[in-house]
Length: 118
Figure 1 (tube, rainbow, N blue to C red):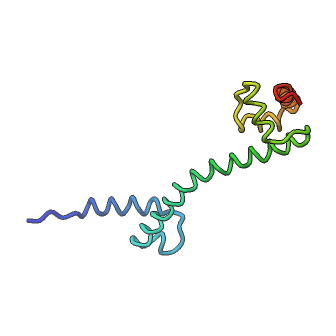
Figure 2 (figure 1 turned 180 degrees about the vertical axis):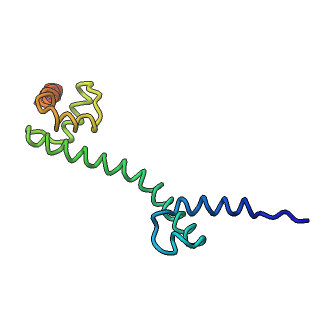
């Protein structure tokens, strides 16, 4: 007698429909469209996990650029000065400092200007 896949198939379908909860119409209720939608959603999720990293880096750079302009410095000068002064702060922490603690950011800018001899 041939093996039947009844219980395993039901379990697999249940797993797919569980992941498709919250989708609208056939995307939630029909197996093929649910699978297609989940496949596409997975591709978007994979792509956008990487895009999110780029987006945040752009945000930090924009914030730093604005904070530097207020203090008479360009963003590129800030980065060059940080390297020259051996200050190993990343863009994320620098932008947080610029927002939360302007006095500390002014101190960093002072060291950068000293390293660049401006």
